[in-house]
Amino acid sequence: MPVTIKFSGEKLVAYIQGEVDHHTAPDIRDAIDDAILVNEKAKTIVLDFSRVSFMDSSGVGLVMGRYRLAISKGKSIAVENLTERDYKIMKMSGIERLAPISRKENNGRFGDAL
Image 1 (cartoon, rainbow, N blue to C red):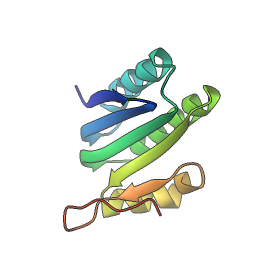
Image 2: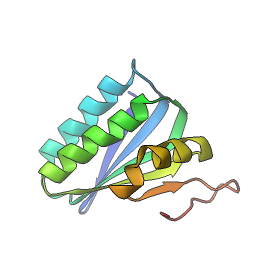
Image 3: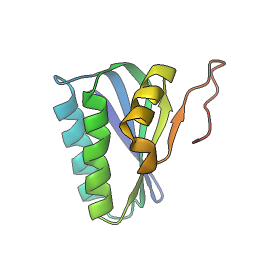
């Protein structure tokens, strides 16, 4: 499965893994959407990209769709642990105006949302 979902209090974390492209995005989307709809306690949805090896524009669409669903359910969203390349893609797409985004740092530690 290209995504692992974990719940912690009022936070739902989706650990996305492998490639995010037009082949894998529908399965990832469905799994995250199902988790959002089932867990009413979760106030924050975190999309963790630390295990993503490749992302094309499908990643932006994935985030945008989850943002729309989360907002419609009164939840917030955050995008975390992006590679430098993927961080730039998300930033250029305007995602940062909708949700906090953060990138992995080169030394293995994770950066704060900018």
